[in-house]
Image 1 (cartoon, rainbow, N blue to C red):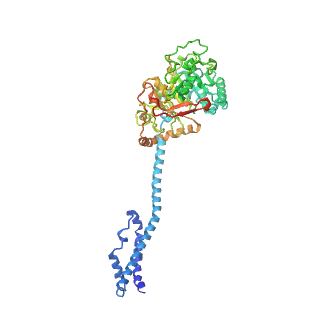
Image 2 (image 1 turned 60 degrees about the horizontal axis):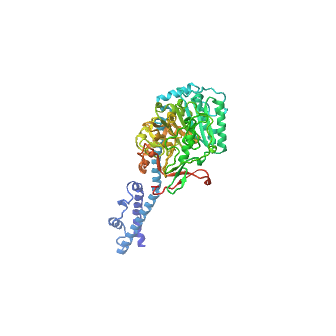
Image 3 (image 1 turned 30 degrees about the horizontal axis):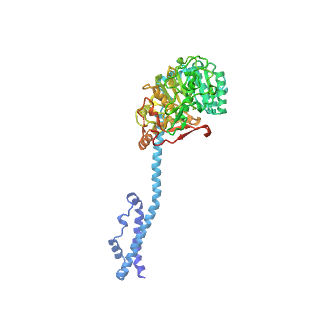
Length: 554
């Protein structure tokens, strides 16, 4: 048949073209996604095919055109098949390249992690300032630290010297509010007793105030009291487990005439109760007709405005002294002799680090010095009470924690004294004269409706001493043992987080300025528009968040 004779000679040409396409497929993937010129059949190539056919003279024009069309179509199908094969190969090639790039990146990150871990850690013990050696050596020379379970009678005879961590013999008042029975019976209770022994029984007084936390907590505190009496008999202690009625706490009055107990007002009262054995009197005692320690015939002179209602605050009146919460059984003898006050939350902490916070931070030159508390190995917890030295809220809550500014720069310089306006961090040391002077600074809340500020921030504002409050990043605490165990590891690599921290901060527009950031004297920088209130008795335990109206009571 004519068509067969015409197509026979064309077959080698088609196979050659197909082979050429296949041989160019990898080059194609390197250069362009469009077919190269060799794959485009123009008129000249069609004419060459016709000229090579031996039956050209026998075929008419119609057969000639038909042969050319068939040849062209077969070549184009060959090109399409080649592209399909190329597309099938491409995903594998891309996967290989992605795998190669990922391997290189992961290797680089791994090397950077190893390098940072070994050569560029952050806030490790080997980086302690020189003055920390005084406490460290004193502890070592006195026998070191007792095993964690020693105070529960599970580690044999005591081989350490009491007071070994307090080379200057300073007197320390430890105040705590704790409700976790497991921590009292475990890590927290053990660390507190070790800390008291390190300070020295004759130089330490422990005051715990617990409010209506249940029988388990009460039993745990009773056991702790007995252990301290047996093991550190010279130590002063006041452990009060009682019920603080909401009826005794001032109530905020809203524009709609409803009244509530602010959660911060309640927390301030609880913290002041822990201070009571040292300060001797707090304003709430006056509402019950109590003027101070029962054994001391002292008549307290009310300060101006004390226990007086205002436009926005209603102070309870005519309270029956018989219903008053339990007072401490023991009070500090000679409060003016005390040098330091240490506040502890229900945290897992290292007692030697607590010594460094008390005696070593900024060589002892501070009015308040805070540690840092972590809810997980990376995330700083107490953002509510922390403000940088310029009054800004905390940045993204992982290293370096602060938005760009003086506080961030100091922290990245690996100093033990990062200047801030306020902090708490689960553990904080104060100079005792803040609380033992004639008009002591106490915890308080804002009396303004719909404006809340942490009592742990306001107390720093009320101290009103320039360059007086510091955060010490060497001192870190957590709320569980597992997280505490990870902290040394994270310290060694946390400098790598600075880049992502800066990027996230830029993306979300940090630092965020509070509405009253520049209001330093009255602590306006501590607050924000919100209202947290205690639930009434019929609502059950706990607290709730009330919505803030648009007019905010103005």
